[in-house]
Length: 592
Ligand SMILES: [Zn+2]
Image (cartoon, rainbow, N blue to C red):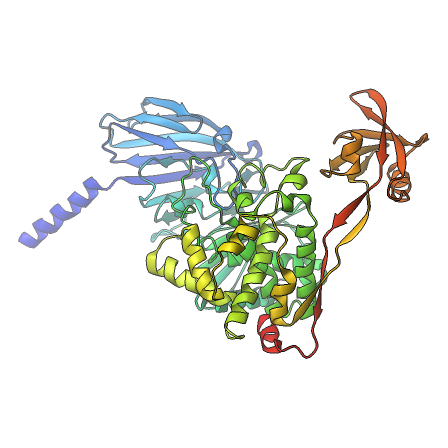
């Protein structure tokens, strides 16, 4: 008797105290591209809470102002009476609570931007990128919650990494999901429609693939190739932390890449990409996004989690998060046999020449490129190549260099894998947090076996050309410096209809000196009317010091400019394998 009373009291205590958050997601009329959202708040005792919509989607470092798509935000009490809800900022609403036990906040979300980081709805399917759809209650992001999805009548499937509710009965097509906290809710994109779904086991993890859109993919070979990649990446870290993992693939005309999540990813690819030789482009994307489930979702800078959804989250370490991941998306394809050693080295060499050949590489240090991703990398302009370094490519080259340094320091016993596994074990599993810039450097120094202060100064916080010859010699590669000087115009032009339009101007080039600007139309050269081919021919025949007169149209004005051809120094490097190198063991370990 006593026991029963106690249990009853205990249960009622739990029921009264726990606030609950529940969402209903509906899409009754997909042709208008609106998701209808209900956020049901129960047992909130405060006088006032703030409801917010994120301004960005983690993994994509741009303030996207998702609230621009939100309409008709209203709050109701349990009797259906309208409650006081004031808009506070561009993305937040203040809700006054006066003892209401249950509050339903309703709004609609315009979803007509199909990308891996935004949401979309039409009669063919729905895609939910949660941070643009689900509001959160400020200070309650750590609360558990539930989500019911009511698919449109012709949509038969829902694919997401969100856990299914323990009572997953389907009533009228409704599917019930749960989430541990707001981070998990918005870290699990949702595909709703009639996608082709298949699954396979790899590294003890059940992998589900949802294919939206037709494509020339072959499911059996995808299963084989993706399994190899997953197993090779799991081997880097020694374990795969997920029980299940979901790939949502959008097969469309303009593929846009992927976005990583803890136990899922969304990939956007050209629907015919699967015919490329050995399906490399798709597998490269798979290798990249899957590697992120460790590197950035679990191994991460301290600034990238818990996320502040209301503003930019700055880090100087995207060159590690994106750059190292880019290095591994190639290295893993080497390890799975999709690339030969020569193909892998050729890719790395191209990446080096691309980075060192860009003007921006001498202007923006890679750490600054990372920090400023929000306003530079994600907001490119016609001048970006003159001012910006890509932290993807420069970061992947730095990963190769650190890999070689660690291999050399350990005499071919371990490489960058061991360092990443160490970060995963120490910070994610041990401390359950990210690391600071300093902590990252200190741990890296232990593995490369030397102080990196000067290296950081020159190549990470500075823009010097990396010491390729010295470094790659340690794995038996000679790096030939093929830096060349050649006449260069310095303007990139494109034929648009009958017009030749200037698209970019290299800083310091003769095109800039002559007074050409982006957007100018080049009408003629040396008294001849020109098209793109003719202009190229005439300009390319000029030697150093020779001049040409261009007739230019700008804002309906015609004028002429005189260009005087100048030399352009273009750094370039070439790998050559040394014969009888004393570093044969290191070479073979690296490119195994
Ligand atoms: Zn990435």
